[in-house]
Image 1 (cartoon, helix red, strand yellow):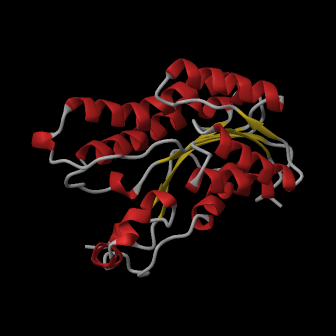
Image 2 (cartoon, rainbow, N blue to C red):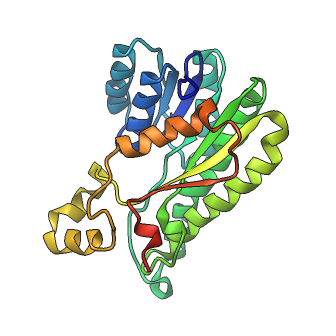
Length: 253
């Protein structure tokens, strides 16, 4: 029963598709009421319908995580709509380009850090007053295996996700006194619409999977179910940690 989330209120950012959507629905399946945030209101409405079909409450709070004020407003709206906040999943993030560092425009570097790191700071600062009011609360920062090694042509993304790891550890130390656990979840190659372009090129896909000992793509549920673990009392003595779910990619020499 410790893997259940009955009576918990969760906010998931980047919840309109992919991993974020999967986590939001998995939380509802585990018994939580869920606030969902992203830019696309139409897709959020679809996710909300999925959550409500499971008998749970859904609150839609659209926001662009590049806008700090909008993020803080979304957190407040989520807490108001749910009647409190027990769980925050900072899932919004990503990468839209590749470039050698020597030729990278600094604006691209800045936008990547704003999307993947600063958005977490805005959401987490806004959520802390709510999280600290409950007996047991949890923050999950979605990072990436890109944070664990060098990332040629994606220095901006690897560095941003490494910053998420460092931020997670510091948050865990600073917030433990308030009963707030903070951990990071590090997916490897997961089959979502964001990685469709990699599967479209057979040679590219083969090269990627050759580095994965399990020789396959991860599925969304293989990330959302570990997220339920991190949010639940099953991980009650776990904070400041990195949970890597990558089919063995990160242990390859």
